[in-house]
Length: 126
Image (tube, rainbow, N blue to C red; front, top):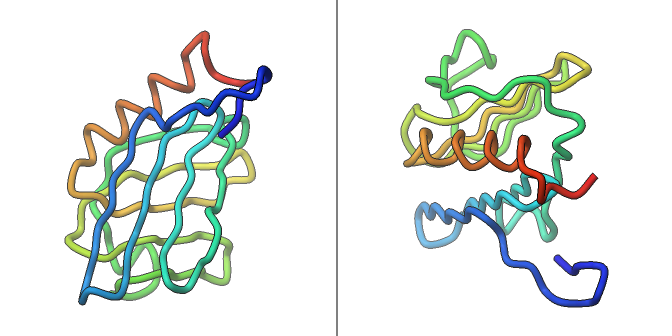
């Protein structure tokens, strides 16, 4: 991420989760967005702007809520998205269009705190 004067800004929060030495879920909380990438399937990050987020909460993955028990990347017919490699804990983002994004993490409270802190921060990029 590059600032106005060209300097690099590092993420406020970063977590990498691996499975089977092949799959890698990378989660970054940046100054203006949450960035998620599931490699090797996604070559670039999906950026979820803080302007799109209505609510952030620690959540437990439910197969009934998200349409099946699976890991990896899943998009449902109603627009919800799941990024999950391990466990059933994570953070749920509810977007302004009422779709949900579940991000599986080993530290859900830390991720939720970082997102909330940056959404309220004076340093957040508008």
